[in-house]
Image (cartoon, rainbow, N blue to C red; front, side, top):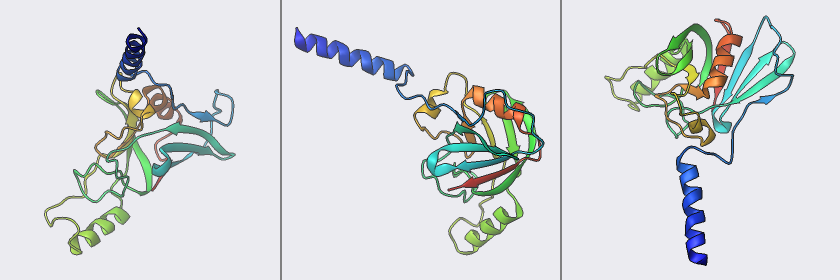
Length: 185
């Protein structure tokens, strides 16, 4: 009887886990009340090693959102198709609603600095001569019903930064085109 109860309990826990239930919910941290004041300037710092996107305004730290990336290597983007998230200084250049990833903030990757790093790596033979630097990197939501990927630190994108759908919408509504975004290792 005890072994049947243990098997039943273990099966239940496994089913909860597989269905997307999480005992650990990675939620945003807030330094101010949830009604965020209208600010004239924001800055975003994304820390890949801590899986965090932090928003700052003129008064300092405002919000922290959990995020995930492309490759689990968490190294700098080398070329198109490597699924890595680039590191450097960027700006939001466009906002759009993507049919699959919801609210999308497009970054100005590749910048001149990225092109220089790319060309140096190509000259050093670190990437194929036919490689391209890539593009289309942005901050966006998970696909529908996949917010749990953020809870589980599951890196799934092609190189973008992804957060829960609710948080991507908040960022979309808060951050204007032109906002500075720094991505750190």
